[in-house]
Length: 383
Figure (spheres, rainbow, N blue to C red):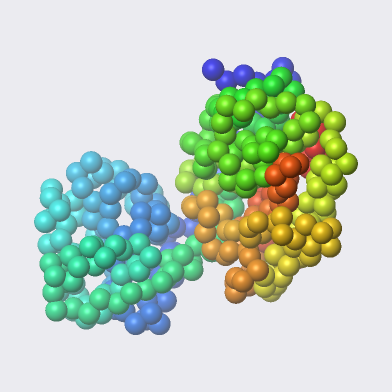
């Protein structure tokens, strides 16, 4: 049973009136990149990429894309759903629903023969060695298979209005859920219990699911950036790292706040202040044309000046969208350049086993003049 505070906050957005995503144009955009990748057709096997290109949300599908059109193949469980979802998204594709895997193979092989495909692209990051062997020996005999990298992901990196709206709504669910349960930290719950209450409140507010396993890490556990919530009871003197997100209509949110339960030590107070200042420096660095590595550097330099450079144990951020971690990466060695329409996190941290951990994270959308916060929870240490 979810326990919420007496002063429950209402969700500030109407989940029923989100703008549509511009799905119908995406296959055309993909075709523009296929020739440069050296292929005259592409077999899309990543379900996330298939969802992006067609609007299909089922768990089994293949998508063939060539210069003349597209073939969508699924199984009988999703026959009606595939017709409905592709039609709603205004995606033009032939749809086939073979009864067996052999039928799927035959449909794809026939399409390759019919359209004279000589170089078929495969999504290198989503095809196993065993699958590659099957495509070579059984599906597309005598045809050259070409490894491609990030053809669809490269399109996904810039979000349209509908995508940003869904991420923002997921962020609003997370903000509201935290507002409704955060006072429970004063009651001494276990990490696992607090995580469960937060997850339940996000679902009550309309989330389809959580974005990832919620992190609630208190005391010494907070010094491990990806600690899993356990049976440790939150107590006075603890820093508590709460890293969580909501999933809405396929799109994720991501936010971290660190709370101080009881009176902080001088070191804990300084840790929190340094991370807050580092995060603010990172947010101010996010704008179009800036190398992602510069955003990382903006955060890292503040922490290094405080003498805790070795205690910042991870990259500064990552893209957020249909995957909780996607391009662009925001780290010291990443070569991406920030652009308008990117949605990224900025999440520096300091982790000291003897004192705990502090991480502060926001999800932002990059605008023409800088960035806009999508996560709205105030950055204060008091639960």
